[in-house]
Image (cartoon, rainbow, N blue to C red):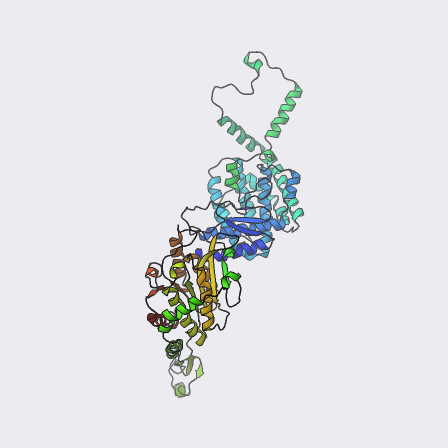
Length: 596
């Protein structure tokens, strides 16, 4: 879900920070790790909940490798990147670092268990149709390891319990269970990696003794498939073709036998690209972890999908705290003069508006009492009931005080500050925020007022630009200050990528502890970002639909001289003149805060 997108970004970056790694979200779907940076695909409107969990679990897994694995050991051993030794080692090392990570990081334990359960199901579907030795070995390895790690990954074990592994392979693997459990307890990078490498070698050598005939038969059958009937053997000598008798020495026979034995050793098996991709839970590349964590299914993306900007690249200007680049603090006296002429002088006084709201709330918030109940404070006027022999009736001699908690609320106001808002629209928006700020300050309702557009930073292309006029933690911001802050930001009105800005504001208000949370979006039209339009409208609709469906935050669209909000928000109203603003806001507060 898109509403979780920013949280996932924060989670991934915090996890990577444990190993001193940075994170980059890019357009390509090639998750990888170069030793300093983890590269992940951008989050789009097509990204599913499962894929978001994959990103988190994959990053945690890669961080665990960085903290607990030593790939220098593999370099020293000169391990074949396509050999079965690396395949089995990678499986065992994953088991080791995953269990270490799960013991200290519960978030990883839950995400990895859920993500890999679905991956294992996909692997089993492929392996059951594949007669190759590596398919049988993969099923046996997963089944064996999941029983050992069941205390950390119970869902994985539940999935693997449905599979029926090869009995011979399973019997061999069971002999090494104690050694794998011991590996799970080794925290040292080098010692742990060497232990799992040695375990992989020992397992393969044991399998070579127990399963040599089966493996040999599989290879012979594979060769037979490529031979056409009636053809002469490629090993046939020139003498044979001429009808002359064969001549061979014992030495040649011995060499041939050694070569044959070497060919049919399981430990020398090489995997094809398809086998590595189909049967790896994670993908090693050239003895280094070239791809990140879990073997993710490719993300299907359309060229028209809107991608969520990396949360760290949002430009945020906080006026009350004086945070942001100096260019965003340039005065604009003309804006203030025009506001007073075209909107401010036509408004109902803020004090009168606040008084109206206060009286309305006082009526709703009057203390009520509940009488004739079985628990509470003793009600002397009903004490005579205890004299009656009427069970139930003679117990109801108490009263309770019921306090109305309608003011347990917070409000976030998100103002469109794009180029199309220039003129009367931005003045109406300012007038509305001044009224809301006055009311919320008077009634002690936490309120945040934020403007949004997009802009260009020194290092990035067009990204969302957020102007904080008043934060939740700013107890009092005066009317003159808010006017001044709007004037500052009025010089930077460009595009409006609504969906991304709404997510930013939602992420902040959703964390509040108040019972009622209201997000008011003031806008004059459809989303239109400086970096393009493709997919932005659908992205914005999806964001709003998810917020409305979650019911964690009430979202409301206030249209300014435009009915465009009616195409995006279920709850909305439209303002065409300054005189209409107080009435609309009163109705909004009645419906969303006071429940009239």
